[in-house]
Amino acid sequence: MILGIYGYQDSGKTVMVEKLVSALVKRGYEVASVKHSPHRMSADCEGKDTWRHWKAGSDPVVFSSEAETAIFRHAKLPADKITSIINSEFHPDVIIMEGFKEGDFPKVAIGRVPPRKGTIMIDPKPGKLLEYVENEVAVERTLAQLPCLDCGKCGLDCKSLARAIVEGKRKVADCAELSDIRVEIRVNGRSVPTGRFVSDIVDSTIRGMLGSLKGYEPKGTVEIRLEKGTKAPKRVHRK
Image 1 (spheres, helix red, strand yellow):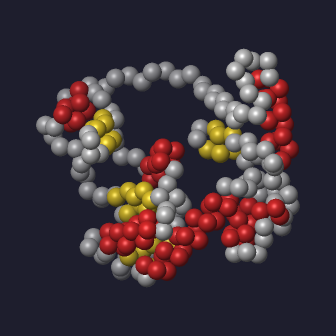
Image 2 (image 1 turned 90 degrees about the horizontal axis):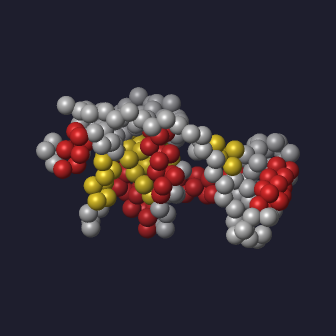
């Protein structure tokens, strides 16, 4: 899940993030966090080798050592792009966005700050916030088992069904479109919902086409990626 924590400077945002991250990690969750600054500043330093790489035209620039790996992208990225990169590369259970007041994800306000859209708590106790996050992670994990068609055949949309399952009121088997075959389709990084019928058709069609190819294993996992060709970007030299 993604959670934003925002507030004025010195309101205690980072302290709350520290407590939440520590508690989640102790309970076995994988956590990623992002720190937003309202100021025009860079973690890269003028004159350093990475900065010189960037001035020569490289972007992004990666610093790699025995201790850490840092990726410098010298441009502002929207919150949804940042979380998309983190999710696709690292697959954490929770992403905490400190300082982000905007974005399509639940947020927690710290201190006397005007509530922003999506705010679900104001100055919560760490334990209460931890309970909320754990519950939302459980809902997301359950939702990942459902086709996300929102067909309504169970009487609920998929997220409501997932929440009811977590609460012990329903079962995964209550989903009428749940297939025994796992088929995942993504277009431009976004998952396309598939039900029982589509999953069966895609599985049988693709496996039928691959049946005559050398190296194909009937019981193996099949991955197919289709990409539209794009023109190479022009190099930009910085002065």
